[in-house]
Amino acid sequence: MNVEAIVSDDGKTLTIEVRGKLDITLYKKFSDSYKDKIDSVSKVIIDFSDVEYIDSSGLGMLLVLRERCGGDDGVIDILNPNPNVKKILHTTNFQQLFNIK
Image (cartoon, rainbow, N blue to C red; front, side, top):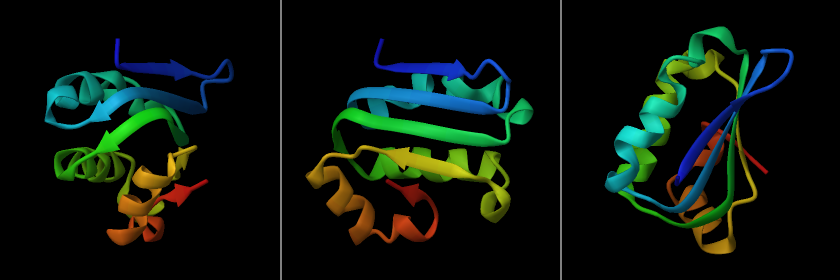
């Protein structure tokens, strides 16, 4: 599976692990991974350790997730993007919307 969602033991943090390419082919898996969990957590972590590539549809999926998390009030960390993915995130100013670490 290319997307896996894990809720922490205390129920406060949702970690979404993405592998491969974050593009339109993962839209359903990505949105399904959080849709039933997002309302019960206070923080979302997206683990990009194994993301090779992100395109505009992947960026759009991150924006939809951000809106579901409450927009400016949501706390979303994007962890471990590779240099190419990090460059795309910074070129599109996603560091203003997400905590990129």
